[in-house]
Length: 210
Image (cartoon, rainbow, N blue to C red; front, side, top):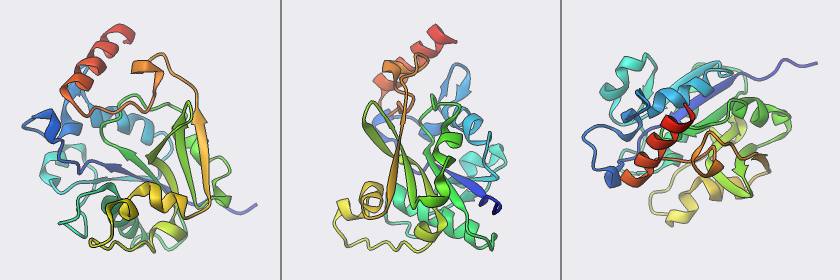
């Protein structure tokens, strides 16, 4: 049996979070006494062989002790730019083909078996994408380096063509559906904190469920 590919991870933390009105990057906002991004890292580190943070504000995340990777196209705001920059960073350090997990830094209720389930059978996939109750979450995905390292970004292209969903639809994509989780708001383990209302709900949920 061939050795499994290395599995790396990128936490996408480059969003401006303007709707939050916060003075600090959104992934550093706390719920239950811990920053959102630390809760994400709890799950990622269960399986990843290496993890980086995609951000254009590396000084804000230096205390986490992880490499902070800036977008190669700083004028292009979007998760695809962060994904590609991280993939190329790992490719410069790893000769073998690998898998790259992408997750958002504002999703604090990720299922503990996220990486294991996306990786199950991943050798045959270009990309495996998480879903819950039929709703696909393009940011939460496991990518083959064969695909993601060769992606190019054209800032002049229509916005939809620069989305993760568009890339996934263009390749062999496996959808991995996760069960509802009572520990997450609305049972959605991919609940993300985008607004002050979301933040209040997440904090209340953590208080209730511990």
